[in-house]
Image 1 (cartoon, rainbow, N blue to C red):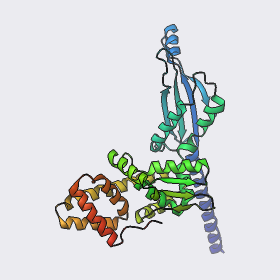
Image 2 (image 1 turned 90 degrees about the vertical axis):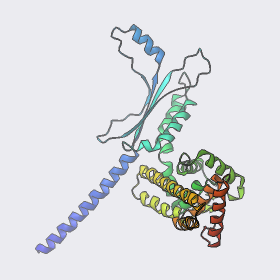
Image 3 (image 1 turned 120 degrees about the vertical axis):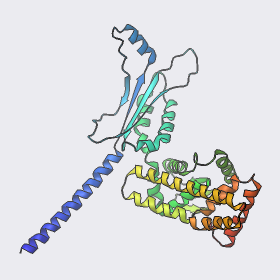
Image 4 (image 1 turned 90 degrees about the horizontal axis):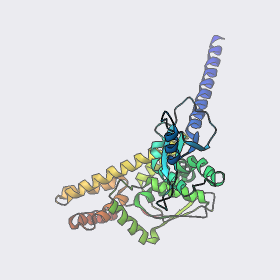
Length: 346
């Protein structure tokens, strides 16, 4: 009898632990998608006048234009804020300054999306008029959507494409143009934002990226087409390799957590690994200019890294004006095709 009671109690304990675990996971997810915004008018001319009229010289407070009703939770939130002013069309005209503030995610989470948030704030400049006449009709809806538009696109893209995400990762690394057909505007924007976040822009020499973009744009037959008319998106002219397939699986593992910030962290790790491999290849190529053994090391590295087709494409563009390095790249390219080490295009 005691044994039965013990087993029953253990079962109850396990169920309670499972329930607590599920509740903890739901609470964690709720925290990660909690978001707020505030928008303030900071009129410097008014502040100067008030300071002149004030006996104690205390600064004037900013005027709140739009603020979501919220009480700050007990846990910490990430904070992004920016002071901006519309571009002056008349040197004599006065334009007030504005302060925008976004709260959400973890303390360091929003730092991962600084570029997206900067761009989003820049877009607000075109919507703000000096009289703030469009506050309800335009500005508030725009501010209310900041988390959806800046933080969630990567997560939505992963959830939409699942195993096909490897095609998008490959297109982002190789700067292959992508065209989305038969889809709503949000999906098209999500794909564009994902490709922008996954590209090596800023990590690879600007001239190389420009040349690579031009080369891939000129080869229109290599543009990736995504048809979203059916229940499952269909890819055409898309490439994938082992490197992108491995990282695709890492993204799908993140999907189980439901944390949108983990996707961005994983994306930064993906780009870092691709950049490290590219730098290693460049080092091997420089050595291979004077050593056949180093040339063999280059070949083995390209064959085993899983991303040889993309890396070859990048160094081929970068070394086009460097005869010795270009010759090494051509030899490597021949070896890779002869050994069928380059992945086919679907």
